[in-house]
Structure formats: structure tokens, C-alpha cells
Length: 126
Image (spheres, rainbow, N blue to C red):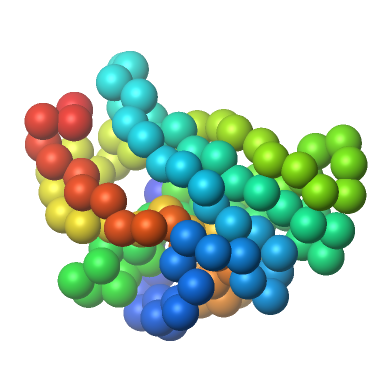
């Protein structure tokens, strides 16, 4: 699936890197220098967490949301836990800047469920 750019601005999250009303917490984000370049990320979930979310990236200086993946299954085997997976970010090769990884509602991409701490994407990452 090609990334989808959402024109609307993302609401500011006061809980970047912390658990929130949806019960998600993005615990780590790192680069995998593979072809294509991927972001490896981990998150924790709780019983109250939605079963699915969309994975997005938000450019900090503009608040524009780019949805990278939809219908991501959010939970593992138990009522709580931690999962790790990756997402292709090759579409950002020519868009360096400061970003946050975000989990957004599948039906409303403006509804941010969780955000990571900010990180820098550089051309040298590719």
C-alpha cells in the first residue's frame, strides 16, 4: 500500500512516549538499513487498547500526517504485552526532518492514539 498523506494537521499529543487513553505506548523506534529502509518499532498495549490501528509518521515542524500502513493488528496473546515490527519509510528519502511515529485510528487518521518521542530522518539514513 502506498503511503497516504492526510492534509489535516495532527493534534498535539501531550503524552508522547507515554501510555494514553487508548492504552498504547510506543517504547522504541530505530532505523534498519535494509533495502527498502525500515523503521523498527516496539509498543506496549493494554486490555482497553483497540484491536487495530494505522501506522503514521508526523513531521514535527508542519504536523502533516503520512499514513504508512493501515489495519495493523495491535495485540499479542495476552491482555497486555509488548510487540515489535517494522514499516517501510523509503517514501521519506527526499524528506529529511524531525518526525514522530504515531498510531492513529483506522477510521479517523486525525485521531492520534499514541506517539513516539521525536527522531531525526536524514538523507544518510538511506
